[in-house]
Structure formats: C-alpha cells, structure tokens
Image 1 (cartoon, helix red, strand yellow):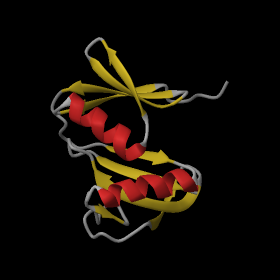
Image 2 (tube, one colour):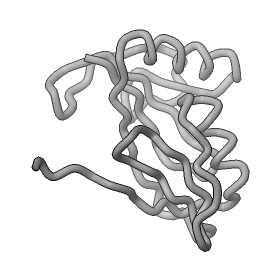
Image 3 (tube, rainbow, N blue to C red):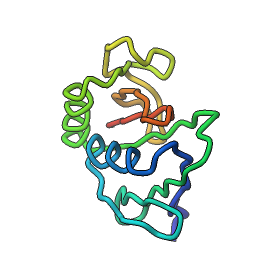
Image 4 (cartoon, one colour):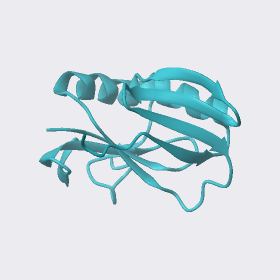
Length: 125
C-alpha cells in the first residue's frame, strides 16, 4: 500500500466559517463533528479537521483537481469575489491561472486565502 495523507488538523478562527467556505468553494463534503473537530471530507482518503486555535502563522494547502473540477472551483472563487492570484506571492492580482510546479509536475494553479488566512492553491495538471 502506498503512503497517503489520511487527515490533517487545521487551526481556524471559526469552524462554521471554515466548513462553509471549503464546502462551497472547493465543493467538498461536510463531514460533521468528531469530538472537538469540524470535519470536511475532501475525498475517500482525506479529511480536513478544523479546530479553533490560533491560525498564525498561515499554512499552505494545495488541492489537485480534474480540469472540470478546477474550472468549477475557480468559477466559484470568482463569483464569490475572493481575491486570487496566479502565484503564491501574488494573491490579489486577479490574474490567473498561473503555471506552477506541484507533485505531478507543472500545472495550472490559482492561489487565494481561506477565512482564517491560510494560503490555498487549486491545481490541475
């Protein structure tokens, strides 16, 4: 079996805001509550577990998607008026997608922040 990331704990200022943002923008599933965590199910093998804690320093989370999922998520980012950019150093330039390297090579990517200030990247190859 290959090693895969099963879940990760993300510190947020507000769990409900985090769940609403990630489910709406990324199109992932609300996984409910598990103990002190508000959970979203990214796919069959990964959950994001949000806990109320100081979110600083900001972290970077990158999500690879099919071209169709990428186009849909990027459309939701634009429709919501979320500042985005074509590189991790240009969030807010409203350009993109850019071409950046990821785990599978170079692909199209857009960068933006979640409500707690974490840098998010959506990517397609």
